[in-house]
Length: 556
Image (cartoon, rainbow, N blue to C red):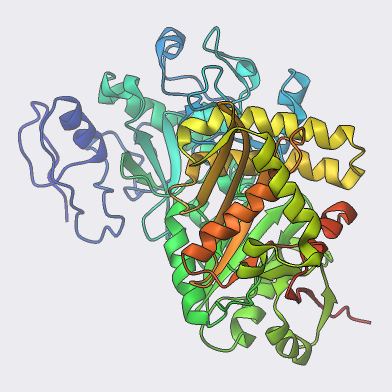
């Protein structure tokens, strides 16, 4: 049945296209979002009545409104003079922003050749950039952005992710279809007429239909973002959707974001694996803070939530399937996906397997290898520090209290710059003391995790404390409640020039937790570092919580 299109005078009609909705929005008119019959994509409202290629359906990447020759490179829609005056692009409020640009392998190579530091790219095969703090301390910048000139240092070879903007690739709300839309966050898009935006989108769709471009997007699924309410949908892209499903599997594979933390928390609660003696890894916060370095994804398989991590070496599961039932079916499905993504690489594995699941994995034919255990202490012991075995720690706490004028406060986001400066000082102190090479690498990796903690502590429900000595921030710590009776110390940084500061901060953290109902303190593992191991053993753990890595048995 033929649909009625809007007339040229923009008088009311029976249905409205994405372009027409855009025009109404620009004119300040109210538009009610609805879908024409047979359209499952929510706010995808159809294409305007424009010149079409015969026999091609609407709303798909099988048609382009006005035929265009596929471009060899994507022209810029927004004039440079407008970009230079804008304060939106390339700037981000948080270090873990899902909108930070993604660079493919060859785009990373080009960026490095133009002077962008290697630390900007956690995975040289393709990754979102590690954002850098803004010079004024407010928010974060793309490392390719020059704040003094508002120019991009790699503009001539900027990544496809940036070339597309202010258009965007994203999934629909159900993650069934890849969509092309325009981002209303771009100020220029609120001023440009729909006709020019339409012609630009036609060029983009022609570009996306090229096999090499499509293959590049499929190989780098993070180029497709999550659904955003403020992005006006222009078209579905079924060819690209099908290609992505062919590579990564038919089930929706979701990026793990802040919004998914309640989902994972609920799954963990239902799994029955939350107990006083649980590994620290059985918390979404434990994983989320590393999302700058690792790409975390999740998928529902056979009633279980399966968490995946994409590392430079390949894909693995940082936790066993999280569900109330047997792990057999979801684990089989998850390992099938890992084989699909990794081939026969030994990187396919399941980490943080608790001792109670070891028999299940062994029954299914997996090889189990022990890794560093978590250190679990009785909270009351760490507060009282009673007896000869705690004599050294007790003396250091007393010395700190005797020698220093200090105050202990709850962490505020306004402390972020001071924490950043302290972390840099602490890292230099650790290296000057002869830290082993693996420890140096861990320090470098930890910087992005600390940035996320400082920025998202409230959203992650992390408990933070800082200590100031003579008004200057000299220590900070963060932790989370693993269960109602177990508090986990996530990280701790202290100025090593003050004897007893570290011991005092740890005792005060345990005192706070004990006062709020903690029976146990989980201090996580020792990362295989001998110095850290000695320090944790000196506090006399009540239990070393076993931890295992499960790998599929190799075929002979």
